[in-house]
Image (cartoon, rainbow, N blue to C red):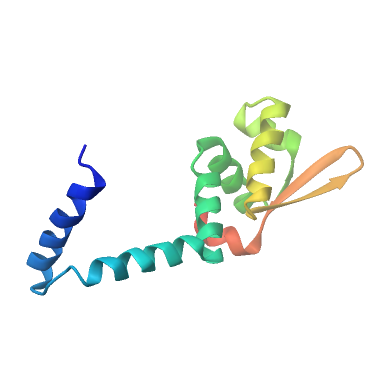
Length: 122
């Protein structure tokens, strides 16, 4: 694997060939823009949501909620074949990512997809 010291000159040469201009001045700009994006709240939220949906069981649970509206944990458990504890963990991840809203009714937990998350769920 190339070290960072070797990568910068090679990257500069590649950018110069692509753009037809000297790239040494633009490398710091690209780095600064990348760091700024990484610190942005919207980037952090999108990353957290993407990671939450990266698991097939969580994606399945979110897709079920999109189609059914609201489901209790036991219904999600029946649909996914997972244990109660595993469903609880997955739903906590989705809730913390802002994709799912949870409410307790007696001893039952009910979940529904957040309206803002509908577009990212199949």
